[in-house]
Length: 318
Image (cartoon, rainbow, N blue to C red; front, side, top):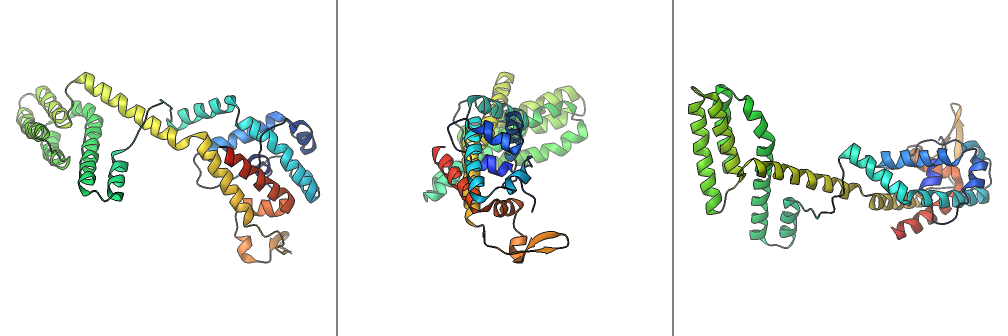
């Protein structure tokens, strides 16, 4: 049950003063060590589905304190943790990290997926709207697929075209053209695919160009400028969706609430015994609990409950 102190200084943080100097001196760490540890945790936590804490020096010192002293230390460290994490500098660093690691960028645009529109229509019990939304999903999927495929057509040979023409004709049908214009474009595109196959025996360059234009026609892409613009719009929407999913405040609030809920499950009266050179829980169910749960048990009710209270207060502000 190794003690991981960063749980104390992260999840229990609250706003306000700079009482960290004295608290960190008692722990044997400095501000830089503390902030680097918090930063590493926050950055890595983006990709985790559960709370997991990296180690921080000072565990023996904390374990030597009585329960009241631990609670006081939790509050002091919490002040600095919140002040650091909520600073504009930390937000900027966090945004830079998720931009580079996850292509998550805040373009300030509203994004909604066709799939979410379909779900909303189904919940409202509107089958026509749901069908229309499904058609949009199919069309969008086909358009994105065409954008990805267009560069590869430059390498198609006769055999590839003969194979892919039938596949792409079926994909055009599956894209669900519904309006008169979409159906006309689909029919034209399928005819162009067959023309490209015929041309591949005598003029592969012209065949490739015809094949490319066929897919563009089916996807509603009129020219190179529209291809470029469409691809750029897709990238911006994807980056915005990534950013929305990884925003600092919602993710932080979720972690704080998870932590506060976890503290409530800890049985501070649980009995332990010495076994195989280490102390284990008598209750085997407790022995299977997470490392963080066991850390909270060792922290004791004073420190752990103080952490939970501060985490709840912080979460309420986010």
